[in-house]
Image (tube, rainbow, N blue to C red; front, side, top):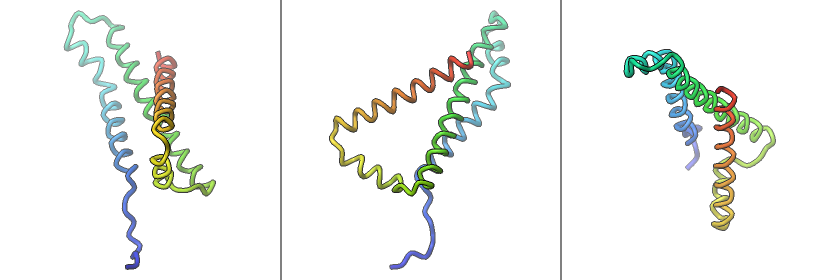
Length: 123
């Protein structure tokens, strides 16, 4: 049967929507954060709510940086003519388990360092 040109959505679209929704919620929490902390604890000083807002700002910047880098990776990936991500995932699944684990570990550490770098840059 021939394909009639209907494209199914990418799996990454759902993840992008979830991250976008999370980013929107955090941006909406930004102006309300200080008032919520002060109303919850009347003994909180002026600096206490500011620290939590800086942590929120670092989370927002981390999500933006991660999203922009993934978008840039996709654009460069298509521009270089490399195989699609689904083919790369199938090839990844054929690797030995210790190679998969080392790749997962390297990805986790690089994301952790990026998050800590965003936190240090903001605070």
